[in-house]
Length: 429
Image (cartoon, rainbow, N blue to C red):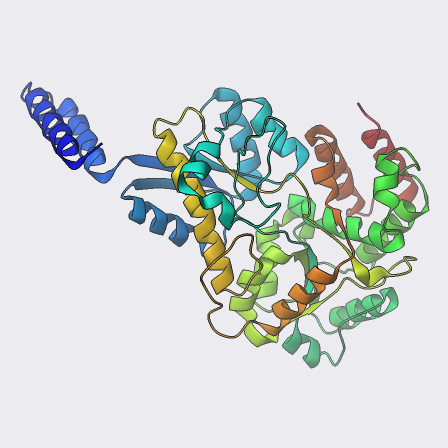
């Protein structure tokens, strides 16, 4: 549409609004004026996100400003988001643009419901597909790209407070015995050894996944493929270690009733010595602790021959993604916004010196935190990254498994009871 046609359309719109407003209906006047304002502004888009990273909102607002659109967004608690998005899919009440968790089941909820719009046409017209790293855009069986990333591949990390560690006169642990000794010393000095958001279940799940990996890197995949059972030694030994951690008071009081965000806050404020979480916590941890932030690989806790060459994480074909509602009233703008928003987030990651998923002209701003720089080197050199279990199984199995895993952290299950129940869950159709 050329400028003359655009001007004519604007005049016709204004005339229609003025004509209708002459009817004397105040409610209609308000609606008409709002419609006129949206026409001038280029329309309105709604966005749902569940992350709390500090750069996500400013990046969204910047893209909206560049596109001259009004943006209404909700940044929702991660656990509430899971329920909200499922209800919205079922009720066909999705926003224009929405985020989704990684994992086979999480992605299938969206794709099987046919609520996501393919982005190929905008990729072709804009030429922006080439900016994304190889493998960061997932093409489905029909050849369509339905989502763009907003988080890079990440993995499990153990971070600690250097200042607090030094004040206790101890070193970060490299072995199981050293970890138990650190926990004992911290408790004796009145410091929480490990912050854990047990209420959200997945933080404990990450620890158990990694403990199994430290026993045998192939155990989970072999069990999933029916080559061994979930009741065999690697799974039992890992469960025994969780029970030992619980008995050693490794976690803060009330950890089963505290969310992951509460646990993180405990660590950020210097009230916990360590936290085992995903590498996504680096952003806030760096801003909170600065040079006092330390990082280590998960200790050598089991029988694996080469433990430090492996990790649990998010290398998968079902990543976290941003999707566009196929019924969006501003479909093409929603698609353009989504792709540009993904690239804008990538720029923010680069500026922060973090892992990225696309080309960027940005450069890191200031010195990259030593702990994070060390992690990036390790991440590139891991020989094997086990996808988080929840992402490799169906949602129904995943929810049951996480409920069971949480019970393990209550100290009320034996390792044999736990693994026998897990075997039953994992073998369900």
